[in-house]
Image (cartoon, rainbow, N blue to C red; front, side, top):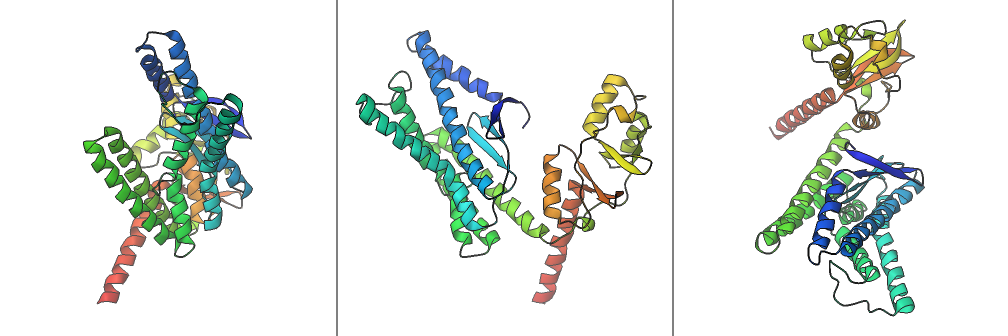
Length: 366
């Protein structure tokens, strides 16, 4: 994710902090300092937020490590001001596996809450209930209720919360996966409307949560619908066969000429008929600004790149395309470049399929 700072690596998973997280730390520091103008309160507030997001990392690791048991890798975990995001390669197709992955995060919070409760009761003798203030107060008791709150909030049956995936997994055990997603998304949208309506009268934060839930439900439904539409389609049906290539010996001027003359953004780079790199538009523009149009392509192109096979299914190839920070995926057969896969072409294929499906439905109705 852009604007993120790498914090470290846990269980082979990179953990990042989005720079906007620093704004949250600054806000917490100011709000803890102002009431009593005490630096100790300030450091206490920052420490609480750091502990809170440590809990969020553990929550996301619950998802990631459970998914790993089913052979699904996690690309990274990113801390945001509104929580954490674990980017799994994919969600399990088996509803039972998805159920386990979804509940793993809240389960971590339940275990942490129970552990903190045991420490408070047995170790310090502190009461579990009582005033939990933003400034000051018992840190362990605050963390206990944070874990309870995270577990309950994440189990709301609405995307993108874990509860939405739990609901979808339970429904998918009894109906088609796409239909289960549509029902779960509809439930989420109803809850989102409810949050927004209540928030207008009582708490503006609920309006924000409602918008967040509505967008998450819509995005999940669209993604699964697209996944269903692409099922069983090979890359060869969606790839572009009329494309331009660059020679490793070319200058950047040639790439600029190709961009201005057509629609292509990224260019496969060949040498002796063999694919040796990919020049993206972003890299091209940076190099032109830095080195000029006469710089060689070979010094700018990416030598590490993803490819696709024309016979493989479109869905996994599209997933690689969406995560490679590029607009085109070279398609290789027998070490020969035979096409280029782009998001634009995949979108056009889906529009054509939808039009054909609509025409057939109209003919059937007639």
